[in-house]
Image (cartoon, protein in one colour):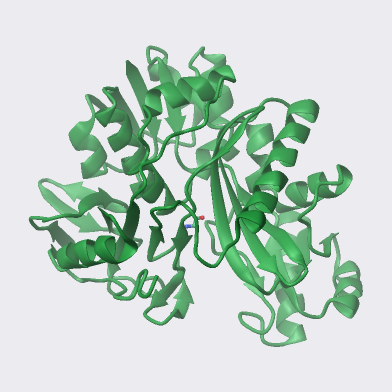
Length: 412
Ligand code: GLY
């Protein structure tokens, strides 16, 4: 089976690795040569992954998997579907759940789907000030994709009212609008699901660690690591809370199917469990990074077959191994604010962990950092403690100007 994987991060390495293990003949479309993906691909094409014209060469593949959000937002799924390639990844109008924050909020509001906090889509500073009168503590969200760097919270990133208004004004100038939301307080959780337009099949829960330094200190990052438990839940989340999140996702997909079309691919819901109930923080129209690594390492079913089931509307309940996983990201020194770029790194002999290359590139036979996260290491175990011990036993084999958090899944 000829399978195209679009993207060159650790999430795409996880997707490619699973497809390869399931017997796929891989073609990879990458912006930069990821050595892990390249090593298992029959054919490697370095292209502009966000440019529809660059996809003319892929008509011969049997199915495509699109990993990152940016190609989905510019309609690469539409391009591939038009060429007759069954594609795992929503078309542009459905990926809008992620690329327009206002769209997701208004969809829930207009269709009576639970999960919205108090919010306002503001097109001028007058509307911003009106909302701030009733909700002084807010999350300010640019409408568009920002690579995880756009959302700013009052009291944390925006220290004064002046700073909050200035950031809103900047977003309005750039995008014509900004989304203001009541700041939610509680326990965050993530649900990832396979979706075929009708069925939403939730995967094991994964918790990630967004701050750069131990003790959840320092600036926000794309995530420094993640873990999952053998029972596929989280000890501090009841089944009822998880069900509420899943119900919000199901109602969203059912509404989209009726009003826009069949969403086919991965869906990631970020939620907050608060004293007042479960709220949706945001949707992503892709798997999480690194959360994809945790769940795909446990998937017992063929991902090729699951992909066809998604595009054909025939999803079944997926089977995941009852094991724990711990993933630790090794990142360049100075990441995320002042990362050392273009530094060589090597991954030594690993006893238990599996490496997933992220934002690196190859120069000859040397692998170098780009300034973003470099390599994720994943270990499984009967318990979280065992998986944790295994991954940390291997973490110092990654050599170079890099660091990693030492407390991923500590005490879990
Ligand atoms: N780990 C967070 C994300 O992928 O959005």
